[in-house]
Amino acid sequence: MRKDLPPKVELHEVVMRDGIQNEKIIVPTAEKVEIIDGLAVCGLKRIEVSSFVNPRLVPQMADAEELWERIERKEGVVYSALILSERGLDQAVRCDVPHVGIFVSASETHSMKNSNKSIAEATKDVLKLLKKGRFAGMEVRAGVMNAFGCAYEGEVPAERVTGLVGDLMAEGPDEICLADTSGMANPGQVKEVLSLVKELTGDETISLHLHNTRGMGLANVWAALQEGITAFDTSLGGLGGCPFIPGAKGNIATEDTVYMLEDMGIKTGVDLDQLIEVSLSFEKFFGKKFPAMISHLKGKR
Amino acid sequence: MRKDLPPKVELHEVVMRDGIQNEKIIVPTAEKVEIIDGLAVCGLKRIEVSSFVNPRLVPQMADAEELWERIERKEGVVYSALILSERGLDQAVRCDVPHVGIFVSASETHSMKNSNKSIAEATKDVLKLLKKGRFAGMEVRAGVMNAFGCAYEGEVPAERVTGLVGDLMAEGPDEICLADTSGMANPGQVKEVLSLVKELTGDETISLHLHNTRGMGLANVWAALQEGITAFDTSLGGLGGCPFIPGAKGNIATEDTVYMLEDMGIKTGVDLDQLIEVSLSFEKFFGKKFPAMISHLKGKR
View 1 (spheres, chains in turn yellow, red):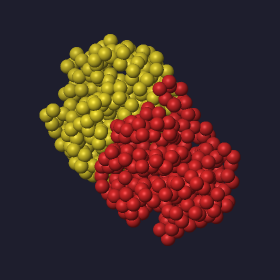
View 2 (view 1 turned 90 degrees about the vertical axis):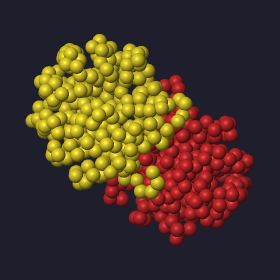
View 3 (view 1 turned 45 degrees about the horizontal axis):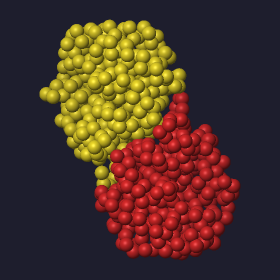
View 4 (view 1 turned 120 degrees about the horizontal axis):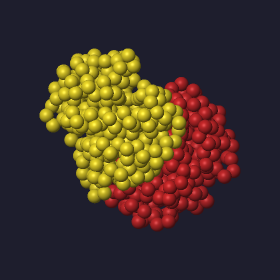
């Protein structure tokens, strides 16, 4: 282990939400359960199970309530959901969801497309949801989407991101997440934005949600590690993409991230060989090769 | 431009050597000439044209002498060749090659497979070649292959790399290159090895030859930039791979590297739009999608 790096990192597996929400093939609930339970066995300690959204807009999430019934809920694993509305939060309460993520976009255009609200309106609603979630006894993570750029608008000023983080901090979330929704972050920018955001969050956990759209996913992880970040969203196989962002596919792959971290002596708690088996079995279900690299490597890992 | 980063970086385009040497389709000389001349127009200032090797072992390089005849040799561009033997160096002299790369492997197994010599024997021969190249008035770059790990042997001790760099420095090369031939480097290791090698090289230029085999290519570029490295080998489209290394395909893509650097305000002198056109035209020749990401991006770059 290198002295300048954190000894361990926590990965939040998002394949069943961000990973598949854009996929045309609808994954049957039984397959979702098998993969989620399999991921828990691999040692992942945080798993996003679903969002609660309009099934007409995101058909892949239509079975969310049933899914929450059927997954194993392994001890020591935090299962989470993404919440976009009060209705969704009510569903989460009914499903006894212990951890929710609630996000606002830093891009006006994306905010309108994603929620039909301006950033200001969306922020007001997000703050209400955060309060309600905490009141319901859930752990809440509050996040900023498109924190490093927007596929519609291009550059997103860092001050807009820090402004939103400041707003979110007022509701005392358990974690602040910065999401590179459009996959536009570069490592220099990650370093810069994080150093600004850290001034606002103090000891609060910051997590990063990164995509590999432009090949810089792991470069951004490395930049964040150097800023002391120890929590990352990753997606099995590198699946992923926002339905309202053109070309924004490919979360950073869980297996590639685990490989890089463990190779540098940073503990993830994840069994890489088992994880690759789960990834390849999910590939088999979809009948296509996922973007992850380590799972397809011939020769020495 | 960020104060902690170098203002500019020099890219050494290796697609016509490392990029295609492993491809089964033999690229006709005319196509090679068109791509090489096109790359020079894009603003690349260093272009590897060929190696001089046994055409039975690497048929893709069989037209090396003709190719050197036919390329344009644009002013201000340094064209280079990879040299593996005295015979190859003699050919380079005949072809009026201004810049040669001469490498030794840090892995015994790879050294035997690549050159049929032990590291010690190979080093002796490389030192002779360096001397002879300099005597012939060429610029010489001396390099260490598998400097960050070996597909056959696994870990390569940093002391072996620094030992070899020390040996190579004795011949006063114009540049030291560390090659991640097996694509096994991680950014923590890049940082560590570079800090050791820099102690030996002083003001001498160090360049890195990186692969993206495990998705860490650009993470390693970022780690190297922070160590002050300003010279990188890249390959159009991310083509590449050593014929004697299992699974070691995929140099870091020129277009993805240019995108990342320019996005952080680091000048490369390369016109990205033109470069993508050249990359897509070479894709068309091969009739397959290359690994580079930026060339295939839909929506905002």
